Length: 380
Image (tube, rainbow, N blue to C red; front, side):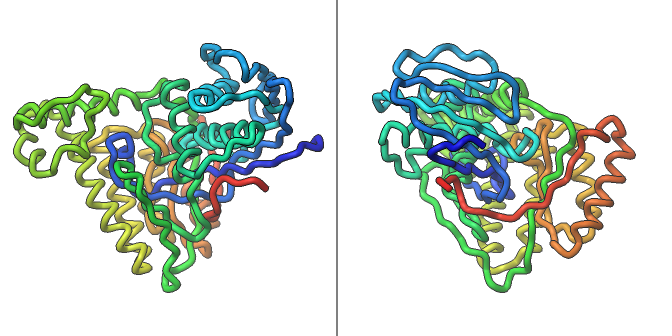
């Protein structure tokens, strides 16, 4: 590796509880873990950005002092998106030259948010801009929403930036208040299994944005039925509507909207229970709630490819898995599980053999990795 001035590690994240609710201002939990994106870079005085990826092909180059170009549909859009979001608040005069590398397959671990976070931190450093952790989160999230075109909340960036080793992030995406909850000394040891289906996906081209719109429409329906004042759809969130209103109106709505709302309210309750389970060291209950979250994702949120559902069903039969669910949006991608480290190899063997018997076409792309929780994005 060429001798660059700075090195940022931006971890991937998993969310054991709080699925598909951050965009509705719900409650979420998450871990950062010890695989992610490495960015080595040096500032440039003339504003030029030149980047090479060890994961994707091609070079990326642009000028931070000029207006942001339109998306090009390649990996360079994430660097351009970081520039776009930073330029809304700051003058950028220096660019960066560097190399970026990801350590796991893309899909379900918020690799896009990890990359954006790294670029935001790098361009801020190059331009002597000091950002708080919440400012890094919001800048990376704004880049993803407004430039990349994914209508997400702040869950992914928050896990990536705020995560701490052996700790659970508990975040209220409405108030943006959060707690870092240390692992209870009585809790058994665990590791994270990351199980890639072999099928990759892009969230912008999945039903992700459609589900967000359905959640907002469910909230609008409930408000209209009960005479609550309506706001523009983009300012409408399920968090603004009490559960009691849902109970009164659920049978009046088209069933698909009622199911989206049911997922939101039941997940809110599961996160609350899960945080208590984590605090008391009850990993069995925490894992069970993660399984229930996945059930609701399948039934009420209606996501999950045939492949992911198959992995989930195999996981439920595996000795040594406390719980787990789809990771990311759950349209293709990966499943995650909390596992007993002493049973890792038996788990690997059982899931691999059963899954590939069902889907032999993924023999070359199916992967299982075991990882540990880690600290958030940082300069090395």
